Image (cartoon, rainbow, N blue to C red; front, side):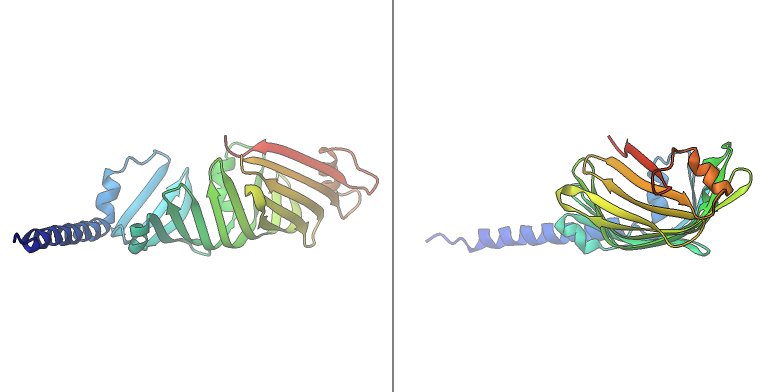
Length: 259
């Protein structure tokens, strides 16, 4: 009788060898030095990277600048085992003194991008390079906490969390204060996100709604009013339209975020 044990043994050995080889290559790749990988990537001219260290698995960039904006230092921690289920998951933190962005970002093979436990805080004055040449600039603190948000272009976008805007000021060239505001975001059915906008005191009274649909359509509707009569802010608001019966100006805007 012919024995199948030798052929079975060889087959099992081959699978074992392929598994070990694949595992070895996997850990070899994720432990590649980060600076080696960056040197092979074609980086756009508006992005400047200084002093990359660590590996693809766990690395850092001492300074990242995009379009003249200094974002600060970047650190990342990859979750390599998630790659085995077809998902790239990484903890990312960007810190520049008191400004920061922290989140766990996941990319799936279906094209879905998910953000968990996202925290950030920055000052609008740090974005001044974007308003260079314009007759106005802005200042104020923006912070947010978003437990879970996800995005899939041309399919759905879901944002859950709260965005806070504090000490908002426009300089044009005189300084005009607006006050403090917050936006509560909630992911809805059919791949849409809605948000409630409210002021929390200050010169500008604001109450409104915004929405983002799955096809990238962004809509905002808000009622504005200056708390102080005959103030410079009231004159600015009147440029947006006429007052209604309640003494507020209605603002409507509708545009595409992506195509």
